[in-house]
Image 1 (cartoon, rainbow, N blue to C red):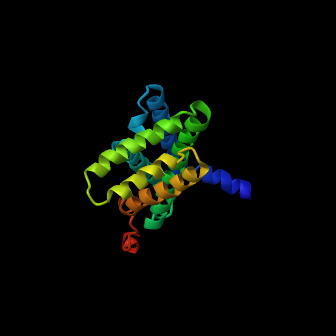
Image 2 (image 1 turned 90 degrees about the horizontal axis):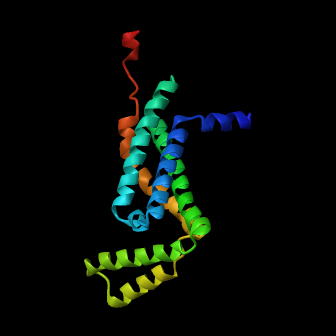
Image 3 (image 1 turned 180 degrees about the horizontal axis):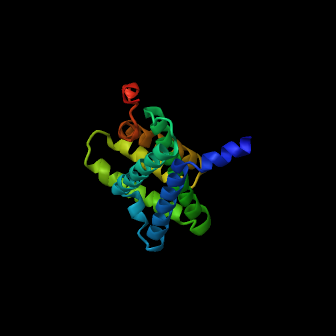
Length: 187
């Protein structure tokens, strides 16, 4: 019984599209690593491009689930489908980082911290909200950070799923199937 439900879960279009999008992002990260352009993964545009891929996957999964399920595809079903797509994508994407940090190139952690410090210094120079002591303290925190830690992996999952799901609150409005309240007139 439990095994059958697990098999049905993995047959859902939302799981398939989430895994496929996650593998696409994983491949992109490997390409950036191999081509010595790891800084692109940490550029401000990379999250927007990955969210665009996720949004396309959400729409595709929602359309497939509408066709497979005979029941109305309500707002909450659309939202759940999107959360599954986002979760699968984020987990696979962050696994790519762990594979790169722990197995392929252990020096990539230091490169990532250096990139994050450089980007932080560029960004903080434009904003004069923090004192120099606060800026130095933030830079020290970045220096101490370990992007390959399991804490960062799990917090990355929680944070990225949460923030992507905020946009999903709007996307689900477009992917749902409205219940026809006048269906009895058509019968």
